[in-house]
Image (cartoon, rainbow, N blue to C red):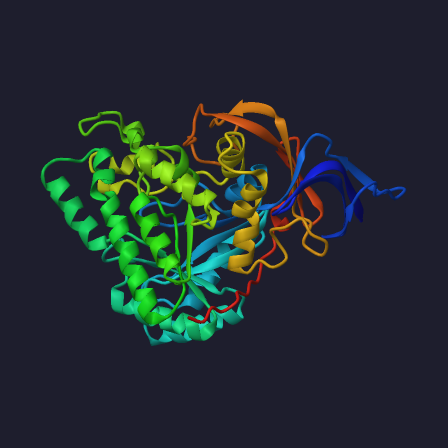
Length: 463
C-alpha cells in the first residue's frame, strides 16, 4: 500500500520545509517535492506541521500498587497516546520482590500483548538486586530491553541502597545497558512522613512538604557521585528542581555522561496546586505525585534546561488514578494517596502551546525533545525522525486550532485532567503508525493489535 502526504510543513531535527512524504507499507520511502503516483492514497497536510510520531519513554500502565491499579491500562493508555500524537511508549515492567526479571516481563506481556494500540517497549524496574538479577541484566539486553530503573525512594518496598546502585552501574557497563533512577532520598521522606502524620498533618499539602527540593537534589548529587566512581553513565528520570538540574550541568561540564528528562507537569504546574496546609479541598490530591510540583523558579530553570540541552527529553510519567475511589484512599492520610497523574494524551500539544507558541522552543527543538532524542538515546533506531527508511510514524498537527485541556474531551480513562481549563493551541488531525492511519479527525481508528513490541539496542558508553 502506498500513501502520499502532500504539501505539509515537514519538521526534522534541524529544518522545516514544505514537501511531500511517500509511504509504502510501514516505511517512508521518499521525501521531496511534487511526489505524485496515480491511484495512490493522498493525505492533504496543507497548512499543517508534519512531525515524527512522539515517543513517551516513561509510562506506568496497568500498574498494581498492592491496594489498587492505575485507571489506565495498556488499552486505554495507548489509545490516549495515539490521540495525543504519541506513537510509541516505553513502560516500566516492575520486578516483584523475590521474583525474577524474566517473570516481570511475562507479567507485562500479559498486560500488553494484543491490547496495545501504539508501539511499545519496556524498561526493567529492579527492586530486588541479587546474583540472579545481575545475571539477568544481560538476558534482558539480548531480549531487546537494554534500559533499567532503580528507585532511591519508597523505603521498604522499591528503594535500593548505594552499594547496590554502584554494583548495578558497574554491571550495566559490562552488558551495554543504561539505568534510570528515581532520585529522592527515601530515608528522609520516610522520616518526614512519620513526623507529619504523628502531628496530625494529614492533608495532601504535606505530601509536597515531605519531599522538598533538597530531597531530590541530594539524591541526584549522590547518584552522580556513585556514577562517577562506577565509571558508568546515569539517566535521571522526571527531574523537577533547579538544584538537581544544576548538579547535572556541573557533572556534564566535568565530562560525566548524564541523561536527564523532565515532564510537562513540572513545566506547567506549581506547588500552589496543593493549596494550604489546612486546606479541606481533597481535589488537591489530583496533584499528589512523586516528585511533587515545585516553585515557579524551578519551572523557569527547567525551560532553560530544555533550551540549552541540559535536559534531553520530555516524558509524562503517566501513572493515573481516579480521584474518586482511588486517590481518596488517602482522604485522612496523605501517605496513602496513590502517587501519580495522567498526561500521555496532553504532552505534545502542551509542549507545542507553551514551548513553541510562546517562543521558548523552536518546532525543531520540540521534535527532538519528544521524538529524536529518546529514539537515539534509548535505542528506538527505526523511530523518531522524518527520514527515508524510518518507520512511517507520522503526526499531522494543525496549528490553526485552539481549545482547552479537559476531562470532557480526553481519551484517557482517568476521571480528571491535570490541566483542566488550560488553553491549548493546535490540534492533532491525523496520526500514522507504521504507515497506517490510526487517528483521523481526533478519532482513534486503530485496533488493539496494531501495537508492536519494539526491541531496542543502545550504544555502550565507556568512561
